Image (cartoon, rainbow, N blue to C red; front, side, top):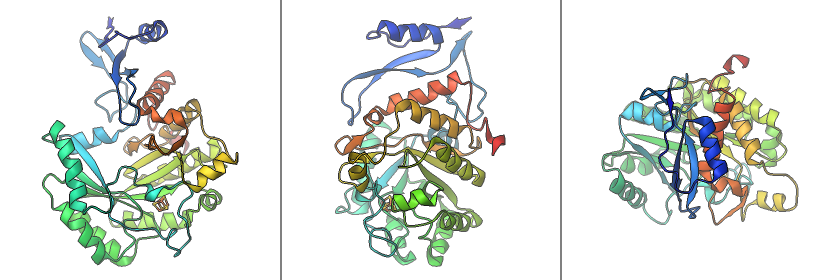
Length: 367
Ligand code: SF4
């Protein structure tokens, strides 16, 4: 016998309630965020309670009935506690900004894509402490993974990287290190240092690929090729270093088929993690000018959910999905504005997976 479990129905509209009754497995809750301060009510799929026990879907890597292998699930399994990434800005630049490979950076990039990284004018330890103190109030037992996020964090000799990474790595509660970079910025001394780090901590190198299509790469001024990405990926993999590959859906000129092709190509590489981002058009970027000139259109929420679910079906169930959407700053975001309601986006993805009765890896045999 299925039991309807409602946590709160105070503000539920009748159409909302009909959804609840039909699904009989929905819990309602409210939230507000800094980016979206209005109180919002959403339904979240949490599974059917049957004779008091939660009936889980058949996806193996979940404890909350998600149909994909979430980063939170992975961290809980690996460390047995809440773990946060702390985004930092170590003051690097990029080869497609400083003229080595190009100028201006990627067309969508604002300030090195370090949306939530600290202020580079502050020391790294100050940036780290500020966020840690905030998190610690709510989760005193939490552990931390410093995330060198802004710009290209291996674009310097190993001696410089060592100076910036080591003091943060030595802080109490740090259990790993995440380093965002480009596949064309992995010099031999850097690879040697990363191997050394990999032997003493949980290291993840995050590679911004965005798309496997070089024509799109040129259009967004990525200034490195897919072949160079593969070369960099292999160098990390042969040293046993975990790689997280970033893809962006909704880039100018890309069709759904192209986005699925990019996901399929990355899935075949069996990376440790992936981040699936939505293209955010931010004020002050080159891509904002192109968008406002009508040169391309943005994805709708329905299109995005459909693409993400279809991409998730391609990834092996072991691949950790660090993100299924991104965070575009409220102040700078031109579009898509629906992306500000991040919980809604994630909820739509979950609901679509339930409706299709699918899960991560369901179509991996098609690769
Ligand atoms: S490589 Fe990353 S940080 Fe550098 S310009 Fe491109 S998106 Fe920005």
